[in-house]
Length: 360
Length: 244
Image 1 (cartoon, chains in turn orange, green):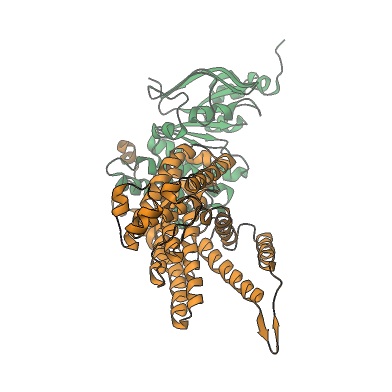
Image 2: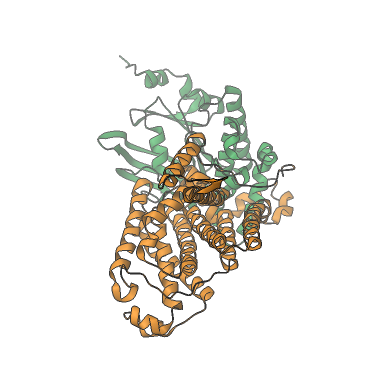
């Protein structure tokens, strides 16, 4: 095939263009993860400065949700296939970190079915979180090999089946997961920094995947599947890569969430979390990493504001309070309005970036 | 040996037979137009070769290797590059990213980066407009520019054969002229083998080369485009007159 190239009259002239094109792509786009990370760092710094305990916990929740939504984006945003099952991988990550970090004495009474070596293991939370991410990634590889042959709504429904399967297994395998009762004793990490690091790492993983050969090919397949496969893109393979990476990020998020609350049940990682995270991604803009992050921050701020209103805000002598339950309704209405005005989410397919000076 | 050989290809969409027992072969360096009215089965045939549409019967060989019913990405790897109808650019990617998609499948070969970079420059040399806007979003290009881009993208796969489905679709005549001008230059420079589907035979007569005329899923005429174009048989084929 190189014979064809050398027949081109210009092939000799262009020896200078040896520098891989990847580099310029990385340099051109790296500003997006940097800006998004700066946004999270700013929020974290403000939180630390206020020094308020409840606010600290709120922002930890936001950062964990950023990890989840970025994890969803890696698969959904790049492949265009909606997944309802990713929270299942968060569940796997959360239980993995529970198995690895709970005090062995508590573990052997609460989860006697675990293998002996696991009962004796006690790792620091960050090592456990990394292993949890790997565990979720391997699970995603196993499920993904079957699922990625499907496409469209069939794939989406199948991912939902994965979520239901994981939930059912974890709700019933009492000796290993504690069944539907809570698994307690997971070390609680109250300092905000590990969550910030987790979220920033997730953002950079998502960015690196999106500009990788595999990420580009997957987005090409999302835009025009026939043209992509006719250009040599192996669509199921590229989807699987994204599925595994996103599954691992979800596992990381699940582990960190477990450490933020100290308790896990299978239903923590089920429909409610699925719909919260998906709606954040959709409102922010499915096709954009920035959209995912901004969707989390905005909707979380909104939820928090509505909660305050529900709890009651003192206005002069009296207290103004919204009726209970109005929070969900107001949130629903706001989401509908946003999507009516911007059907592809706040960011659409665009990423936050600095104003461009000039092309090239 | 022929580069592409089809024998007795039949394509069915449930009970409708779109292509019936079509056989032809192409030599290396040849330019072949497949023309014919709407619904003649031209696009189905092209998509079947590319592996996008399954065949109900028959056999397809590319460079001496059977490719019948293989996955499209494997057929692309073997050197058949199809530009689908309607200029399917990857709208959310930049122009350069669009072009690089085609090289991805060679990524396991040694030295592919160097080769990809020199391919890229060669495509930019053919289509300077693409280089100017290399970091621009592909979805924002005009129709003619998108056609240039998809041809460039097909070139990037380093194909033995490029098949283009209706390059003139939706383009102004002078833009179509430009597209064909580029194709002819490319063919002269690289010895490309071209398989072009067009509804009208006028373009084939202008460019020259071989022409196959299809109607109702079958080949009705096969010969030199200019000779065929001047005969009456072509009118009969398009409009269905019968000779009495």
